[in-house]
Amino acid sequence: MKILGIESSCDETAAAVVEDGVRMLSNEISSQVDIHARYGGVVPEVASRQHLLAIIPVIEQAMVKALTDWHEIDAIAVTHGPGLAGSLLVGVSVAKSIAYAKGIRLVGVNHLEGHIYANWLAETSPKFPLLCLIVSGGHTDLIHMRRHGDYTMLGHTLDDAAGEAFDKAARILGLGYPGGPAIDNAAQQGKTCLALPYSWMSGTHNFSFSGIKSALYRMVEENKIDNVNDAAASFQQAVVSILVSKTIAAAMECGACQILLSGGVASNRLLRQRLCQDSPMPVLIPPPVLCTDNAAMIAACGYFRLQAGVTSGMDIDVIPGFQLAKQPLS
Image (cartoon, rainbow, N blue to C red):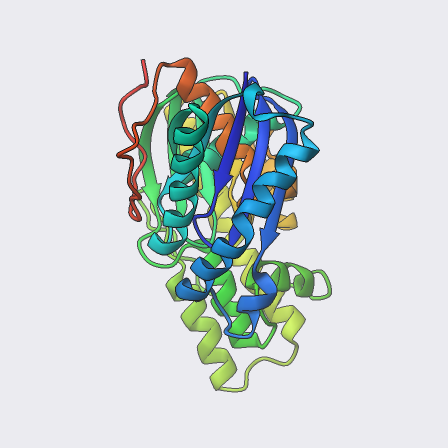
């Protein structure tokens, strides 16, 4: 079964063709990073306009790369939330138009669920039950996944997401945008030597990163930063330590067989290293290209939803604040 995936939740216009939920035939991404870098963050209206310009060429590229004709596509999977409303509308509108014109089934996918399913495109297949850490610019969530479609939120960020914290820290230190890669690269040249507070949120699986960010800001304001690379290394160490400790604790508490790491921040080198090193159970991490927003993960998720008999009608709409469902698909 071949699924065409379409992703446009933020500032990446992406399309991919995936076979049987695990074999990636193509994965095309048109990034807007250079456009938004001048603003220091994503401008929603600009993102929407860029999606309009890029989405048809990206879909065509994905079909060509996959050596696939439209009569071979069994369904179209599209992100319909969470994300920026204008950006989501572009992807959903195009997906509905193609599905209607070609007579192809349509399935809406939660963007966060898609990040989880990026792990099914890796070499090792996940084994239930799972503890999923979704860590990105907009989300930092710990989710217990018992089987396909069966999710329970164990913890989430109460303020900044980890990726958002990295972006703000990079801005404070003058390292540019996007902040995650900038902090990661600077940290490779520095050493951990600053005393930054760790917000453990004892007794819960929740996260808080605003305190670490504020402490860094005060140090900069008071001229206590002698080396930007050291500051980046210290900030990264603090955020990663919290993520790793809370993820492992949640996994042990819920009896998970494996830990799945996903989302844009899953590309962070220290996070990948520390989680694999400290975890008493196997850790699965997609390659970096499948950690950031992409359509292959959406197509993979769409396949498993279709296997459970879930499809969407032409009345499907965008849900900017979409939450993961707590009930199983079947």
